[in-house]
Each structure stands twice: as C-alpha cells, then as structure tokens.
Image 1 (tube, rainbow, N blue to C red):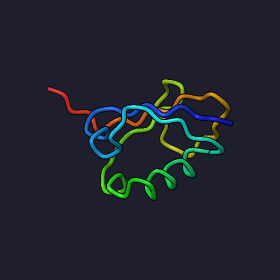
Image 2: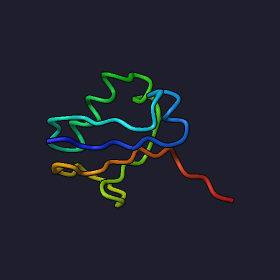
Image 3: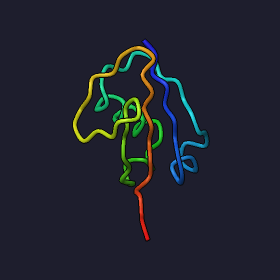
Amino acid sequence: MKVNISIFGQLTDIVTKDSLIINDISDTNTLTEQLNKTYPALAAIKYAIAVNKNIITNNTILNDNDTVALMPPFSGG
C-alpha cells in the first residue's frame, strides 16, 4: 500500500520536498509519528492534514493511493 504525501508552504522547508510516497502506513496517526521521527522539526509546528482533499481532525484510516496533504496554518485578512 502506498500513500502520496503533498507538502505545502513552510513545511517544504523542513521536508525539503513538496511530495513524498510512503509505503505501509495504515492511518494518519502512524503517518504523523513516522514523519516526526524522520523530520523532527515537524513535531514543533502545527499543521493541518487533509486526506483526499478533506481536512481531518481525528485519526483516519488510509487506503492504497490515498493523497494526504500537509498544510501550514492558514491566516486570513
């Protein structure tokens, strides 16, 4: 199972890429844990997670070829 990760804004400075493909991730909590281990600076930043263009607030099961977006905080004006 593979999950496509799209990374936006200041988060690309930490990850140094705007996309990743990660295999064998079952849910968003596991994904976040793995990303925080690989990129420790992510743990210090709040960001939103969207799965298939839907922003999520709870742990979400991931399926093969899902697209997960990591988005920095939004500010308006």
